[in-house]
Length: 317
Length: 264
Image (cartoon, rainbow over all chains, first blue to last red; front, side):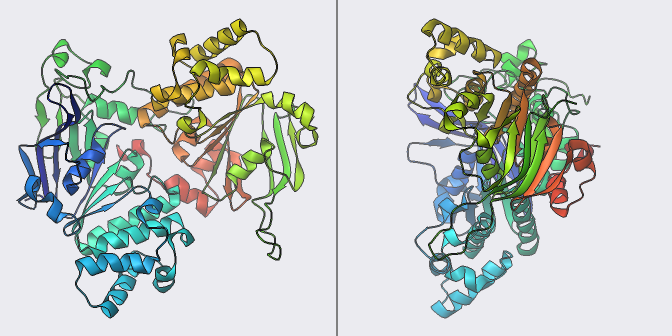
């Protein structure tokens, strides 16, 4: 059984008559012990889907789903009670995630105090151990430091250590490397990969950076305008992208064409969240759209491993 | 061979000591030399703290330079007196990373584009409007955008306005500081295409600063890799990306691999 199973998730804000669709139709399946990428551009609903998993949506959000399960539990009921126990989060900017006026030792202790139930002297040792596990060279010194005395990469390692301190087995990482230098980001991704292997974690990697997906994700889901458009193993997704949007996204990368050639950019804009979408959400920007694409919802294609939603017959060009 | 547009020799930038008794800090830019030929693009790569921004600021004459020379378009750039500098500064246009921070939220796009022109002296209102609209159109936005404000634009549109503003005085050198890292992939592709077009059309030279090796490999003719204030590697883009000599460059180049190689 997969750890996370989501079918037809939709998240809506606003009134019934003027709904704002943040997420329209998201399917997401995450196997245990893997890193699953959630790829999409700004406004496609990837962060808010992560928020739903954490039970962090505001009261005004209307959530509905056919299936919304974490380890067999219905997340619509229990998301709040799982947060911090089974599900933890690593945010984009570690400097914002840490309290600037408290030493790291105190901030680690706060997490351990509320989650582990260990007595004080053991918590200190546990904090050191966790920091060492994230590859920080001198945990004692780090515990005595304030966040501003650490580099961005070290701060992100502290945040990862805090996520581990909760004892969670599922971590949602929302663009964990965007604020870091490329080489430091690569180290953080390598750390996450190692932790997944050693501690049997499962990670949902929310990102818009294809390089991150290539570096660390076992499988990935591509979102467009609040829809899951394609999902599959990373290698298959990159080698034989089947949905026109995935193909366009890969073609827009600077290393997709020879130097000096034009990049394939996607014309037009993503539909705004209040738009009513009749057929396929990508149809207005799709180069190979048929008349039916604008009228009817696209069917699901592919097998259980690699699937996508499109009217067009698959062809690998 | 013509004289290069920008020629930097042994440039040293050092910031002030933090306290009266503290030792002077190490130089932020340590004896850097580089050349940018007319009509070509130089990519400047390095991690945070490597001195990229200090170098840019020195070129813009926003920080005092300890020693070294900068020649820009035949001038001894660092020796120009203030009054002359004001007029010559039009030779450089700058595009920053985040358009929403670099464009004033209070002004209309027309006012934003007019500002560089009025700073150079009186220009009739009619001409201001025409030149602004013309440059906006070259950057791929219709003239109807002139009455809008920055916050009404998407990230890509706002970055086009920032590019139009940088180009409205017809500079010879365009400095781009991470111009696409705040943008989505598909929008990044649009902006990179636009820059390639403008470079052709206007014969621009570009100094392109970025973290993103893939982007820099796509746009630049020559590359300079900086680390802790020094140039660790410099040369043609092909040479550096296929045979990086330094471990640090190798790490940068290896990240993410090549998608096309992966898909084979």
